[in-house]
Image (cartoon, rainbow, N blue to C red; front, top):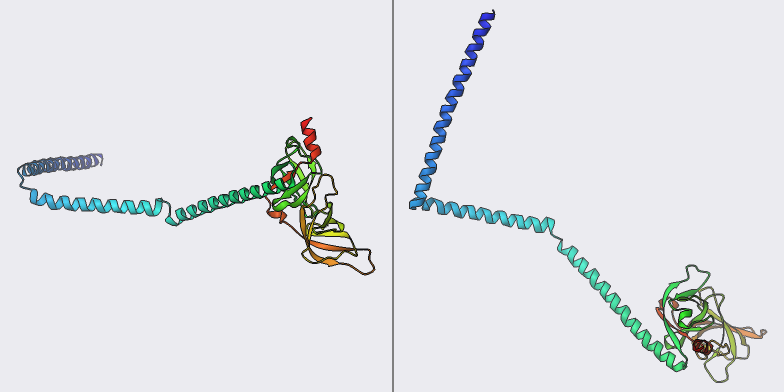
Length: 289
């Protein structure tokens, strides 16, 4: 049994060795044939015999390369380059931002010009200030400006907008900021009068940010809608003639000693960006010391 197994293994090994040798012979013949073919193609190309074959082949290869390049460019622009709509949208956003900034600059320049005109008409020194904050709750109504005691501002100074409109009174001052109480604040009170000859006086008070009311107007005072209400000048730090608003509605009873009127503010306090603080003469004198 052992002898028969050894014999079988020897026969199998001999068959495998014979197949390997035969394969090597075929490989040698194929390699030799390939070498002969390459030499022939080189010689044919050298004498120009293969030009008829090479030219169509070159054209076909070039066309295929061009098509491949066009496909790569299309894929890159379609899938990797920014979408035209996205680029256009970004440009529109940038243009809108630039337009908004330009509009604000124009508005600021116009406000500066009108404030300068109002300041010159008052004949008192003033400080231009930018609004940097507003009241965070509904109970109070004030603004924060970027000028303070270092710029000559003190408590009680009047704050105006363009057209000499009364904006409020300085309530608190730090070195570089000031808090201004607006007329609509319930804590605000200013002595006011009407823009006409021999007018009566009253007190304008805030109505919890919803408007203004002028109280303590003598019952004998003749009032009409749209009458102009201005500061009286009876407060030392507030010049006379600053526009507070116009009469909107009148409330009175025959048995009362006084009447009252609701006012439409002269300016929209929420739209203000620049204001001017009127520096009272006592401040100017203090600065000279």
